[in-house]
Amino acid sequence: MIGSVEILDAGKAIRLRNNDGSEARFHAVWLRDNALDPDTRDAGNGQRLITVNGIPDDVRIGAASVEGDDVLVTFAPEGKSVRFPSQWLRAHAYDRSATRAAGWLPTALETWDGALNTAVPCDSFDRLASDRGALGGWLAAVRRYGFAKVSGGPVEDGALMTVAALFGYVRETNYGKWFEVRTEVNPSNLAYTGLGLQAHTDNPYRDPVPTLQILYCLENSAEGGESMVVDGFAAALRLKDEDPRGFDLLARYCARFDYAGSAGVRLSARRPMIELSPDGELIGVRFNNRSTAPITDVPYDDMADYYAAYRRLADIIDDPAMAVSFKLEPGESFIVDNTRVLHARKGYSGAGTRWLQGCYADKDGLLSTLSAIEHEAREAAQ
Ligand code: FE2
Image (cartoon, rainbow, N blue to C red; front, side, top):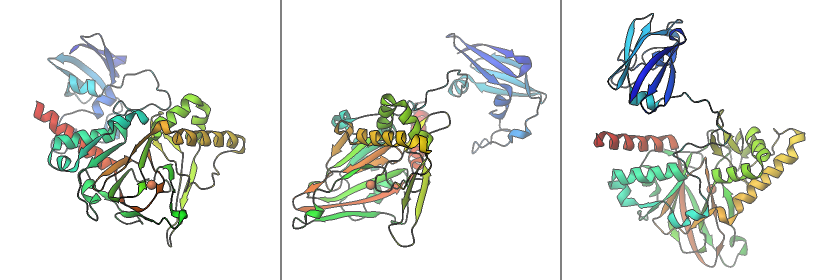
């Protein structure tokens, strides 16, 4: 509950004092831009009806008072009164002084290592398709951990499309709506046995990169061939602990990635291996030994240290203690946040077939569906 409101700096801001002793300041121009009245925000679609440069240059708070659980603000020179619920103000408070250290993560995310092997997030396809609450829980796990499994799906060509349809849309690429990950293991040809793949994020040569990948198992009678996932954010933060300068180099300089493996396709991207937002949030990892191009954006004087950090990050990613491993059964699949979680395949041995299908999808659609489910749950609880 808000106890009092005080006008600051000749009306350029207000300070709210809550009954619990906490305080929050808001600027007049910020409040005016975010006014909740139907002349400022469309009551139907919630979109803003004013432009930021349409706000008077001399906007200020002419009067402010606490009325019940709301703060009533009158803007001068318009003489316009707007009501702000205290809950809304709390949810949108920005009065923080501390700048956050590089590599910070939102509270909805949790980094992990091999200890998550005992608690792999997973739900059954039937439950996800029929129970919106279960779907919300599974999507929240994807948001939190950057990966989750689905069990008990149909064993049929293209079934992975039904997993994507649980939350959003497939992103079609030059590899098609989906692609085959099929290897006939031939014991007479050792070249096709024991071939693992280092953990990687897919398609770092695209910009924007595919933000989700689904890998769906249709057959897996080969020995070995387990799937592994590694939390790229945990790996990047471990590098930061061990070697802050190495972390900074991989975040500060762009690597280059390219792919020209089929006719008519020449993809390339110039992005850092560790991507931070301007205020230091860890927002992406790109790591793929097969498609890293010659790196030419690191100055000569920093290249040796850059490579030392790159090699150390690779060692961390290869550390078995970082990995969660599982063998997919037919009808099982997993999804990874391809901006964060690396995936790998252990080597094969013996006879048998491993047939997976993969596709890409967009994380914004997944998070939108999750947010809508969470909104529905809040509305239902009221
Ligand atoms: Fe891959």
